[in-house]
Length: 124
Image (cartoon, rainbow, N blue to C red; front, side, top):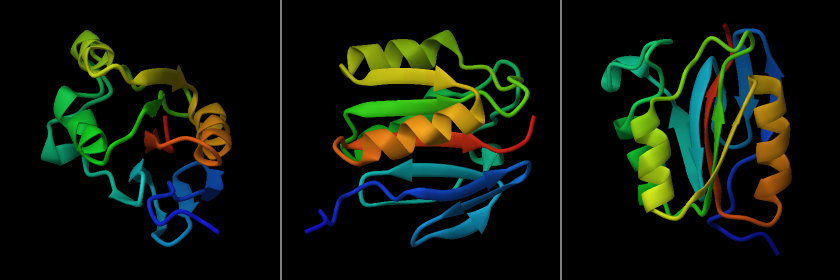
């Protein structure tokens, strides 16, 4: 029997398009135990550089994840601020930073047995 707080699987990923079970399709996603949503960078002022912001990952932590997967984009242009890594370390959350396709594969594997969350950017 599936856990209701299971992290949703990424069912498709290609340049500029992702599909997530139970959520739909879009370009960028925040996924976490029990659900997810489109990731709107303008909410936190995220840009490719300096990259993912602490406010982007706080929502993931609020959903009780123990592992976080952060994507770097298809061309590795999305950076992660040192503050994000420090925040996750302080919360004792395991973190992985990968190219987007590799990040999606890792996330899906982890979702089978862990309370995993992730931020996914499907373009550069």
